[in-house]
Length: 211
Image (cartoon, rainbow, N blue to C red; front, side, top):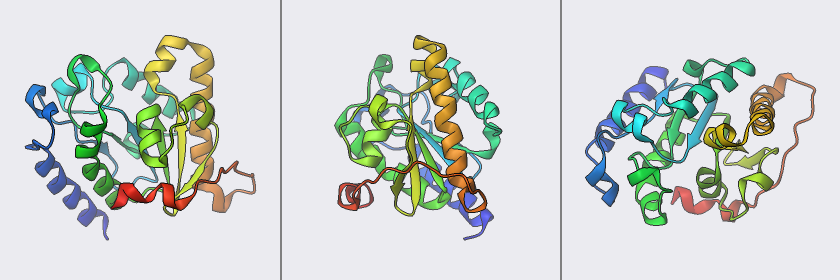
């Protein structure tokens, strides 16, 4: 698929998502926050759901968490425009509460199509919800982070949500930088002799996301 074809199909998918009523979250949204970035990205970043700023602007990670994420990407040599950023759910949960299982299930088809179209070499999951969805695990992010997990011909690298770093300070920020460096290393692995720490995840535990 050419870059132009990929971008066109993403736009069509975004148009479809803009009128979505699959779950009750549509009742309180201002704008569907579909995702943005490079359709040919080697790295895709997946968060939980839009906050107030994102809901108002229709763009992911534009508040304080987004500013921190952009800074962290710069620290590992990446510009935000080089990656693709999205969320597990595309509409803001009321009061910025956690997305509920039924809402995640209703919305995950859009994320599946984004992943298939962009076809990144690595996926960074921010926080528990995106990590648990992709890796089919109930293990918390503190234990899951720090490793790259083989996943559908690519790798998932879990890390903390930027909001956690804003609350917890420098230690979590540095751990996020380390995880992003690992994602970059995974992408560059064929050209790099440096070992990448890879954890095994059984394929049967992943299959539901793509069915």
